[in-house]
Image (cartoon, rainbow over the protein chains, first blue to last red):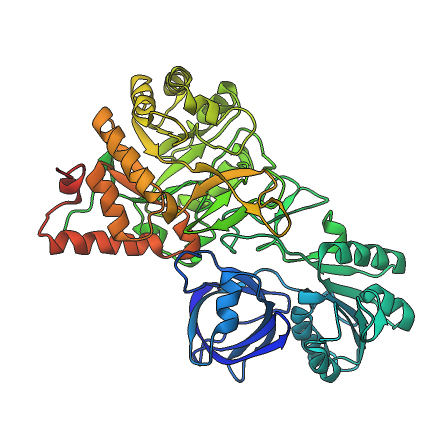
Length: 264
Length: 303
């Protein structure tokens, strides 16, 4: 069930240069079901900025009734959210999109590949994968620009192994997440990734060569967030049932797609 | 209790509030947020004779007080629409207005003829005003002669009353409304989006893959109110007004300017409950002003 909800900021923090963390507390009793990879749309208070800001869910805690968002402040909407103090409330559209298919990942050791601001939703995924099957191996490979390793400590607590890559070589492997993975050669049966498009293209090839199923979370400019406006489409390899053309809605059929289903 | 009913082309609408084409799909997605039974009408996303893939992404960009879009009328084609969307809509007690798009007169007519068999369809809205497709569409809406001809051709084949949706990207909107009326249109709706452009200064490129897009939202509302007023002075057929309506106050401006119906468009994306709030707010306004019926304020603006 999707709804427009009021959420109150419970905690706010700056994690790196332009990366912020906002924890929202929801009214008790109606905490929505969250699948890793899903997102919410946060409405700015600024009346000149009318569209919801799609932001992935970094952590959902039904016990505490909190949703944590970690995002890059890039414009007036995310900037406003980044500046918000505990107690301030926002109108939020959620829970949106199709997340990672946990059933398809059953019995599998999973390699998580996160690049930059694609890292946050993988934390919820790592937690869900380990909660379901503690014995499976979850390796998180995280790619950053610099040594400002936001969320890396949380991944250390959640995943079995964490591999770090930085563009400037100031921490972990110099290069991208795939360089870190090739250096460490972790065990995995499936790949889940979120990050910039060039990285996802590399991940798709990498998983193909490894013969592993691969799930990618895509990003696109959105307006409505619920599948109405057809703004955020991804090219699909097969005719999409909803659109009857080779376009699927990233906000609705996605943002997570099986890599072979999309042309990126 | 105020009387919210309005009449367009002989059909009685529960209230004047509709959804603007392209901002509400066929109602399925927003049915989770809002009660479609309360709406005067659901106006669907444009439907063509065959599926259209639309434009490359990015297709949308936010701008001050609104947004630009260049979706390119992606749609699943009329057959799928009749199989999936119309049965869904037939489950609600609201009028269904189907927006029809095409590149050529032949394509428009193919959709119009196909929809003639569908009892769920109350009216047709002909999109001769989309700024985002390379051929057809807007060309029919920018030349009064072409608009007259396509309107008459469609009227000959249509089983349902016909609304011609006008583009604001013309120098004389009243002339276009008169051409539609002369061609036999039962109503006109306006405005479609205003052609605009946004440049991403960091990447030094266009925000939209299509370069240009249609501007919608509160930013265009004064233009829309002005054009509705001008058309109301020029034609006798009813007008459905739209352009940045986000509140009852906005909608009432359109009604006073001469619109018989009003449609909520881009503001659905801001709040899927907008149409419901607009309906409630119009009722409250009428009560506050001791006006018995919404019909009494249509075109009631005076100097």
